[in-house]
Length: 225
Image 1: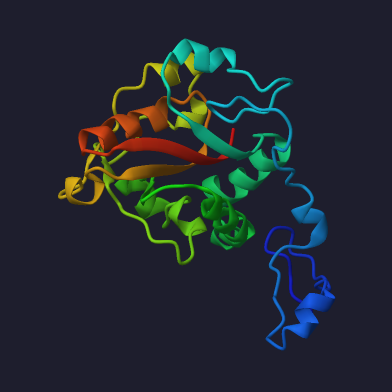
Image 2: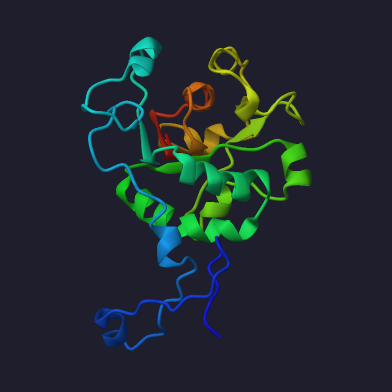
């Protein structure tokens, strides 16, 4: 039987290249059909060099000017309607199969980054109980990472996605260092991994704690901006 796309469910015929045939190895089994893969259009043009936002010029965007710091984040996709639909089904409806859509994309993106320690943004204990997985670590396959951060509160009073921009910016520090985190962070180049960069508040809260753990530098990589 032909494989079914993990996103739309339609069965499709995988595309096989001449290079695939000449490798004399098992043929790759794509998990996403071509139409669904084409829904995800990466940021390729000018972008803000600080947060990765797609824009008309490669200059610091207004949001980053207001932050007034030197934090740098790389983003892979604009947070458009297709990415929102993906995140709704994957993160908020808990469709764990959809991790396979982004796994090869994140693998290639991480290979381009320069870092010593990868630290995913954690989720609350309540999220683990209700959803059953961390949407960020589920995108990772064989890439080593450290759980250097934990969420202070077991539950969230409100979802980040339901907050206004001003409410997000006023969010108090939600993270703390995990026990013995300093042993893996000391003098290391740390890459924070998260799903969506919206205001930059969450990833900066995380970076503050990582610096307290002794990191030499902290940068970010997010799926979307």
